[in-house]
Length: 234
Image 1: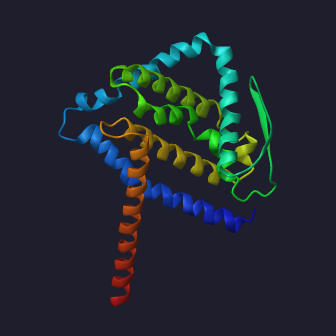
Image 2: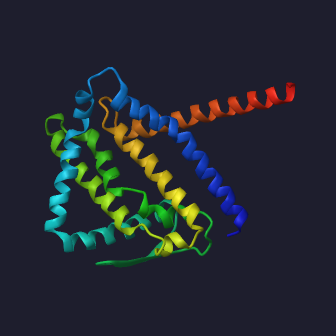
Image 3: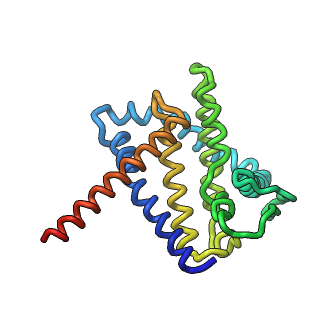
């Protein structure tokens, strides 16, 4: 792929990052700066936080199995995103510490999300969040603990698997790979946090983020238009 295409892709990812930052600020204000006592706001996340803490203990007990599960989830994420791009999966292998997926298609166009997905897409957390609205309210705290465990698991995957030694990452310019990965992590973090807010779920959370990106795009467009007009009229 040409440098020009990578320049365009990098620019688009940076724009997405900049458009997401105001939404991140809104979430920070909701959690830490709103009029409601902070303990009441943090209460929304307490069971997920308990699950995250429990995962640290579980991970030590099942350390060997955890290593295989991390590899499995890595390759499974490749497969899920490959299927989203209508690619046929020919083979799938996951062993402790190593694995591979072979899919159809030789063109790299459109493969970036598939290649980098395991480093920024928490598939198990999203699966649980999709099911969360169906859970009985009385037992929701148990489900939130499981979600917290999945969050800790994926954070462990991202921490241990992300590095320039990965062929998924170093097949592209490293700056592009890392700006893509961390932008996607930020977007996913916003969606997951908002999904726990009372009255919201993962679907409305995704919709709210899309609406925020649209509003920020319009605001940025108007700001650029006004700035250019002022420069011309001077």
